[in-house]
Amino acid sequence: GESVGLHLPTLSVQEGDNSIINCAYSNSASDYFIWYKQESGKGPQFIIDIRSNMDKRQGQRVTVLLNKTVKHLSLQIAATQPGDSAVYFCAESPPSGSARQLTFGSGTQLTVLP
Amino acid sequence: DVKVTQSSRYLVKRTGEKVFLECVQDMDHENMFWYRQDPGLGLRLIYFSYDVKMKEKGDIPEGYSVSREKKERFSLILESASTNQTSMYLCASSSRSQGKAEQYFGPGTRLTVT
Image 1 (cartoon, rainbow over the protein chains, first blue to last red):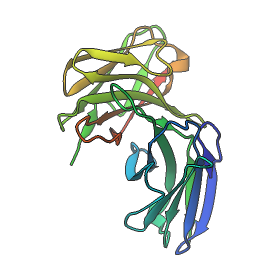
Image 2 (image 1 turned 120 degrees about the vertical axis):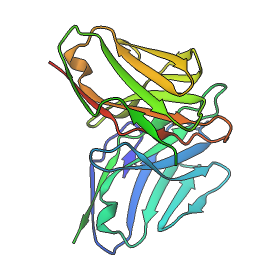
Image 3 (image 1 turned 90 degrees about the vertical axis):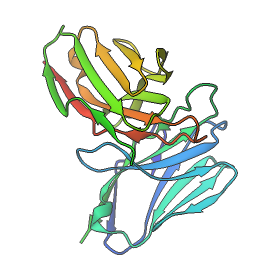
Image 4 (image 1 turned 45 degrees about the vertical axis):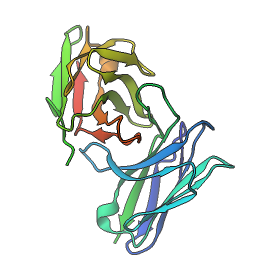
């Protein structure tokens, strides 16, 4: 997993297994969280988001869990596929009077093994 | 689909040169952002803009300036490029009206300063 501000570089999983990527965020005022996927040579791509009034949100093959008590976020990918190999970033966002800003973690490299 | 484009994918400049990085978005977003991405450090916010001609400093504005003369275009300027500005530069945009912080990213510009 990763922490916003700390670096845990790699996670390897077998194709077909479930992946769990963790993230510890730092700002207790953050009320919005996003997971991004970044493939080599591309910009980050939105995967899923969650607001602080929820503790779980599901998308297609992905689930985000939020534990505000311990300021922890996780991304679960079901039936991991080779195309899921990428760097995954969590980002947190506190309320803002102007543009909402995102603070990104340093990322986790997910490698899917055949 | 939201599209964010950046003027160059790769750029090589000499120390002391003035460098312009251009970003254009086609979704009428109010907010635009410039980040740099370095290994192990994640994405760090340089500057952002929440409206035409409005700009705010991010976490690492030193050595950079920005310009937003039109809503769809946000330029990052390196007044006098230095080797420590060698990095991947990512532009992003987001909508204020959505009430979300989701940012859409361009493909990035890899800048090398020699």
